[in-house]
Image 1 (cartoon, chains in turn green, brown):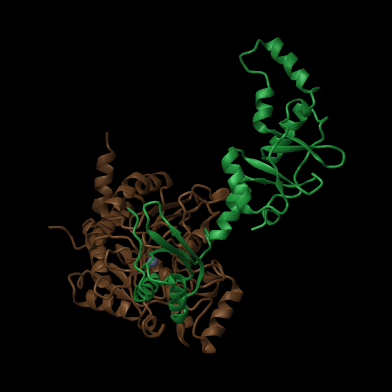
Image 2 (cartoon, protein in one colour):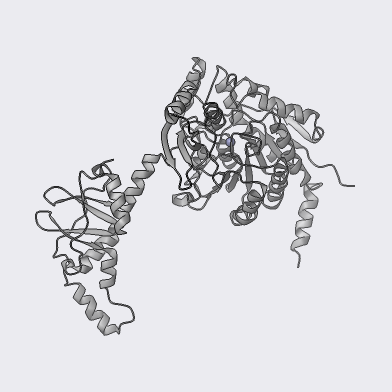
Length: 214
Length: 338
Ligand SMILES: [Zn+2]
């Protein structure tokens, strides 16, 4: 669950003197959206996003001569003049949950990951987050299927369900209990078998009926 | 009075029954016994011509599977192992031979079709095939019968553009994997949504890759989907895909486990839907590739439902057959005249 296991590293970082046009070219060729700006020691100074860069560029409605002059400016202007400072970061010891909560709360696309000295050790984007949770849930694992069962409300539901599945030699690899907003307690179970009918039979005998969503 | 139409070719083989999956396994030999019984005594008895299968040849199999996988499978069967790769895939001593015959059924049927021995062909095979991967058994499947048939059709008869339409309740991951990057084989699957269903693949956003981008089409349906949902997909997605791709041969992956009483899926198809699917398949073949329509049995696990739905499907195939191939050609020409 540690962010250090899921972040992209090393992050591509740039010095503050890099020009805006060079930064734009770098993002374009790498297909990512966030560039941490660091000093000579690798300490985080700020971050430039593709949106910052795009809005620095002249609008196409400008007169041609004026537009050209602005483009020449950008080829001399350092990224430090447009980077965001005082940005949110994650420590290398942070968890996926920390990242999810922060990205969600701040509505941002990526977070630099820094060590205790403030040096950038990686970057964690929403894409990394999705990939991490995808693996956590086993999404797309060939040969598996997710079932949702209604908790029967009696004590120790997960232990009873596991015992019944193991007894029947049904392989499973994810088990999750949640409560929906309307109060249904639901158990999600990822099984590795084609024979879902057999799984449902075993689950029903242990007291768990399938949960059907409307 | 119309002239007698050509028979429907059916590939059946006693040796398919020798693949013994043990008691309580849903993919049992009763499946084929029940189908054979229905075809022998049912309303199609005098419309079908039964032929045996033949074993797939090594190079037909290695077009789709790893050589080492063949060896591994054969050895597992002959040394008495009870399953291959996962306990779902139960085997016995004869399973390898039965699987060779199941993989050869497509080629056997294709030879008959190309020799104009019948209007269409149905291979009543087991073990089924569409989950089998290049080097892995999965979901009761060992050799990918449909993929082997497609490659055979291309290599032996130069039918390059092939479409495989798979309406088994489950996604045919093995067929998709075999042709994912191949622009000449179009894989189209209608199946229960992978979030809720085995094998957890077949997302709508998967459209093939590389030069095969656009010749994979997954049409997942939520649990509870009925005939209307399927027929809507047919007119909105399947028929436009056919019209654009213009296949030279058509393979149907026919699994009957989407029936509402078959508890191997959450889909809720009626028995009648299969008759509709039969008529549709025949009309597509009539339009794009007359006489080159091969159907391979995949799933279907309810003893009381499977033979009935198979019969409905085959009756649908036959209902759409023109009296003769010649008059079909004539009427097409007439329609195209200004
Ligand atoms: Zn199936």
